[in-house]
Amino acid sequence: MGKKTPQINSGAMADISFLLLTFFLLTSSISTDQGISRVLPPPVPKDVKPPDINKRNIMEVLVNQFDQLLINGEPGTVDDLKREAMIFVENPTDDPRYSVSEVKEIDLLGPVRVSKGVISLQNDRGTSYDMYIQVQNELTKAYNELRDKLSRQKFSKKYDELTSEEQRKAIGEAIPISISEAEPKNIGG
Amino acid sequence: MGRFSKAGKKETPEINTGSMSDIIFMFLFFFMVITKMRETQLFVRVTPPQASEIQKLEKKSLVSSIYIGSPIRTQLYGTAPRIQLNDQFAEPSNIPEFVAKEKMARNEFERNQIVNSLKVDGEVKMGIVTDVKQELRKADSRRVNYATRKKV
Image (cartoon, rainbow over the protein chains, first blue to last red):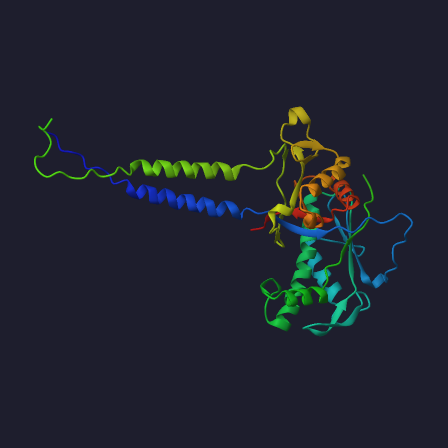
């Protein structure tokens, strides 16, 4: 009579597969859509003239079909963009080259200097989408960093970590994201 | 019959739990397959660019997707970037119709909260994207989200 091979206890197998099952159940719901959010401007009626904006309040960012950048008439790179945008919006020394700010009374914050600066972004039809996103990303980063800074000062927390809706709204009002995309033009090529 | 069985006390037979794991594995595979499935089959290749300042779209039911990229089956459709709405290729002029349909599919109070998720390949030129954006403005569905991957 041969020795009986002992049966392997396979009861725990069910537990292992349950673990896998719950893992997949949980991770599958995480894959939400993510990206950079923007609100497009409403369509402009043809006979309306664009509003006059003080030259100081416009930061011009041009991207050509070779993905080259022109920041306020000077060639630059994506890495310069954030710094330039932050100086332009914040303008702590009230430099006449950068945006004008206006003191506004905002709930929870008190009087705050709110910049009137608008970043005007214009790209060519031949600009690559990747470059466009990089530019948008850098500009968003500039605004987010300014918001973080103010939020740290006032509420000693980062903007992302603010839990109260009023606080977020106040910061958003003090540093509004104003990126204007010019009506598309076919500049060249 | 009785030759190999031990004589004496009767034992209650153990329930065989071996097949339990098979059932659970079946569940597992089911969910693995289900989660891979998209609502639409992609005809265009989309590798979104990377970015760091990313916002998550919380409400999935409000997202409507527009895909732009070069077709996967290049022999049939060529390599020029195309727009895909739902299950077919489209032109920018089809967007107002698409937006109207998406609006009809939502509750009345959600209609102006629809977010158009632009899932665009990084190598696509801005021309076609601008056309789509202009159509979205005209169709008054102005919330957009440029889909990006998280920069590591």
